[in-house]
Length: 140
Image (cartoon, rainbow, N blue to C red; front, side, top):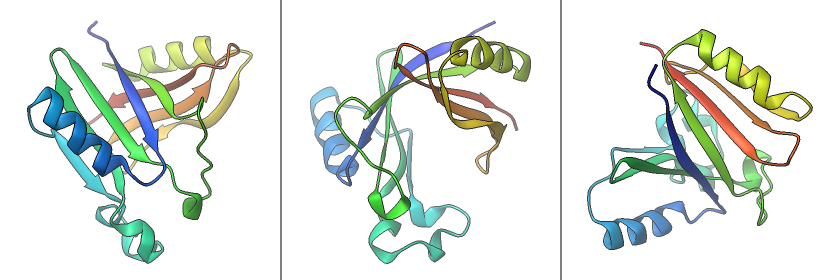
């Protein structure tokens, strides 16, 4: 089984500025850059949210630095300490379930594992030590 672990950062509306800066430092190109307006029903989101970053990925060596804007208009509250996650990409639902259940035991589930609009089986939680995790199993 191949598994990858990558940092996932959250910003208070300035993800695009931050990632343009990181790109200027590390070089390369964005592998993914999605805005909230690009998702299903994105046109129904508040106007000030639509051009913010839903997801961006910047490959740096063997790692992918990823991020999104966490916005109060979407009910999210960003503060130092909750502005980063460890993102694990797995190859199977079974492995995703195993890791999610083991790591989240005694912790707090933010988003249960379920099929997402981008085609992945995905969930988010904080473990019993306060570390935030995202698990993603891409399904076509």
